[in-house]
Image 1: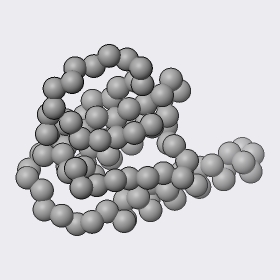
Image 2: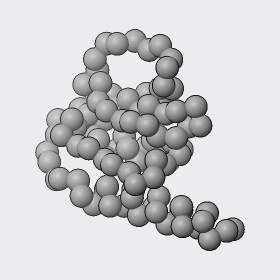
Image 3: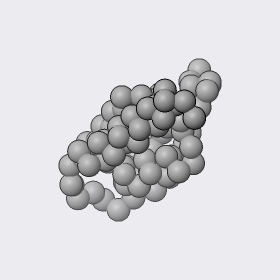
Image 4: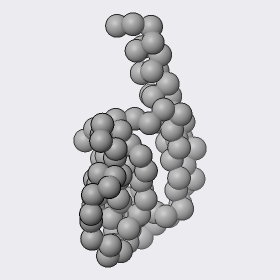
Length: 98
């Protein structure tokens, strides 16, 4: 493993941890996606199943939908769903409720 690869891993882990610990503690309706959150990353992480589940739990959503940028999806709003947008390399681009 190169020093650069190790540094990327450390930065990624650090950015996820910093994002998680800076979340405000708020009561939320059971299973409803919390729109008051915003997670920011220094380096965009790969959207692994573990990360997607972490995001779902963090936002308090009942369900999650992973979408690729540029692909068509239904536009109905679902207050209980977290939408996770990924690029062509499965790197996290954005996450939001709906």
